[in-house]
Length: 279
Ligand code: A3P
Image (cartoon, rainbow, N blue to C red; front, side, top):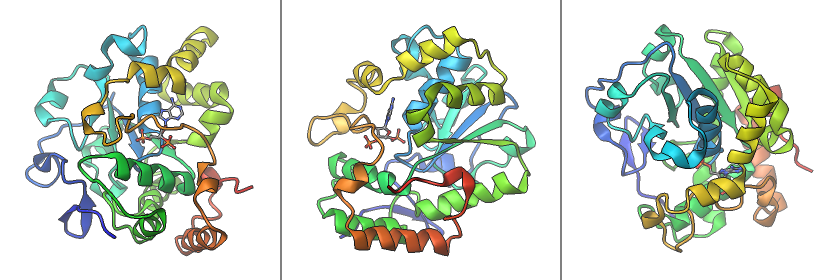
């Protein structure tokens, strides 16, 4: 069981990325007021991007202009990014080593969103099975092997998260870490910490508006036609369940142990900002 990827020096991308953005002559210019949202795929990218957009753009609700502000470093043409007004909220799934270095030179704001790798694996599995461009027909067991080996677009979750946590630990750049699980469990305090990092308004009224606007139910409705032409089963490729702990329906005890071993091998099992409850 495998998934078709395109490779650049051992690094795997989905087949539909804009190659000229990443591999050939990148022309992207970072700005000091950019906000870079960093995630491994399926870690809540759309959610955090909507939250941040509602914080920094003068958008009344998600339906207003949402399609205009979904900037993606690997998919949005550079011309569009270069013409976009500030502040731009740009998401990327790249590991630290591959981001344009001018984000660091410009001291852009960087928000790293991490999710329990077990739920990420399940979400990625369902995504690959429902996306026409990937059309994964194998089992979850087969997929988990690809996930653990990093034989997927954006390689391994462990490599991605390690590359970013090294920078978080080194205080080389002030990066704000958000956990998907904390957004689910304690939205208001997690989002007000984020607002403080971004130096934006933290009024209870705004935070509540963001909470309502970016609820799973509301986003699923606002994005009901989003990428639907890419779906195999006619259901949203992004807004599936939006819960914590769906992995319990997929992982065997042996698979839990395999993933735990991988966490230990990468030294990730003790890292405070990504400690995940396994009960
Ligand atoms: P599931 O497949 O577990 O449902 P990404 O945006 O990085 O592709 O991540 C998609 C995952 O985030 C999906 O997980 C999706 O349901 C979940 N998600 C998207 N919006 C959400 C929201 N507003 N609240 C909670 N989870 C959300």
